[in-house]
Image 1 (cartoon, rainbow, N blue to C red):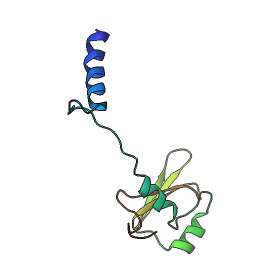
Image 2: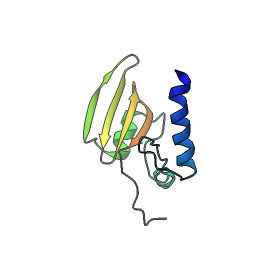
Image 3: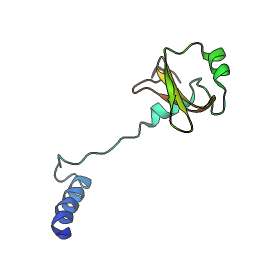
Image 4: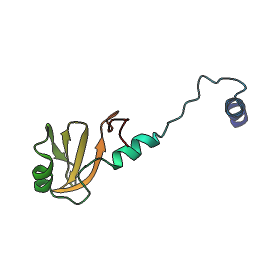
Length: 106
């Protein structure tokens, strides 16, 4: 049974790799290097920053989500990005899909 499943998958993968035959069922995630580089140049809250410091530096969030779980994790949404907190410390900040600095900036 394993051979019957793996053989077509392997054949399709090899064909796609060598651009012989398009395989409609294959898909891949694309890492957008330029967006990652641009996001690194944006001013966003750093890990470990307190909620009071985030408010003071970035203003009031557009929306806040109550903490859930144990430890409690909360989310604040700003225009183009969200920040996640554990208790009152920043865990990480994420960009909303498609939100980057203007592509013409260097």
